[in-house]
Length: 520
Image 1 (tube, rainbow, N blue to C red):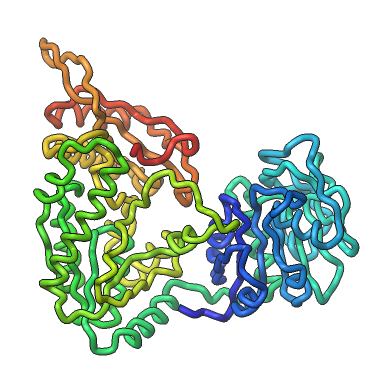
Image 2 (cartoon, rainbow, N blue to C red):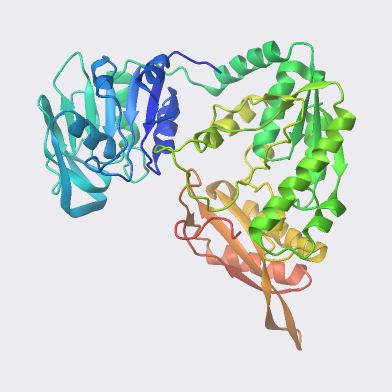
């Protein structure tokens, strides 16, 4: 989808916060796209950006093979903002000096603003603003033509700008994109509005209109199939495609036996009755459980589920989509971003991606990926614009392998049933307490341990269920949710009393990092 107007380009130098930069700019209703810093100058200019942001990164600019950009980028008349490593790179390439700091600066700092004319317009009305620092290098000498516009007690040059009307370059040593910089979003809005001259045209309603027209043009009179999981991404992709082509779309829903309680029934009700979409349901519980029998390694389980899903879907597609030319996938923008590395090397794999893997090379379908430009929060807003029920678009994230990775160790039908019931009670009580929308993700985990308990007058030796609930803005970092004690107590009591075979409930108070959100 080509949206050439009001585009801010973010060049990624390997920062863990790069996606947040693009998201904050989009929250200001200005379209932002990420490219690796290895992109050529010609490629960058071909995007016709109204502004460019150079992200942070783990490297030092004085190292051999440190990621860089063409020096000519600064001479194109395009406003540029360098953040952390981006600031140091601008300094290095412009003739300034960057050195290793005696003391690494990490955490919150008070930013004292010396110039409120543009970038800091309306920021720090009390004379200062809290910002988040994370750097081990410092600017020892600014390049010629630059001046400091803000400082901290440890950084004499916490922000600087080039005094040149033809080359508008601004640099920040701190990270405006993170939540720990409370006025960071305002700084980014000032950059895109005041300095780059953008207007707020990026809305999900406009996206829906553009996507619908492009899908119609791409598909023509042909038929389309969609692998519907019931999650937010595939559901919104299906609804968007259906808005464009109506009955030319057939959705295939595979019941893996690894779903939450009554999930298949909910999908059928929403898509058949509410949306009027043609839906084919494939019952494949036995096939998945048979393939998983005795398998306890989490990565092996993920691969088995992915491969089995592809086989089952292909069989269904051969029956239901004989004349189909296109396949709808719920690919999101983070999936696209993760396909490249700022240094051109492989990224570390913590675990196989939740999404089911790609189809076999021999399949004849051309792809429709209507959400390819969007972050998760934008997908939810597209769903709302399409009229999908809030219970679907507002649902917490759910992993592609389903409950199989929430049953630690080998998966059995009995353990899945126990987990389903416990998880349903957990979510029901969260909703009853009015806390569901305050939590980014909540779920129960079936642990491969048993504990001694007392029920009635008898000794028990039964299963343990762990509860997980986190707050997060994007899933990249997360904090455990501080439940009121009475709510947590009520959840525990209900699970132990209502779910046969469970005599102990524990609550996970680990943050990400060092833990992950899911247990497997």
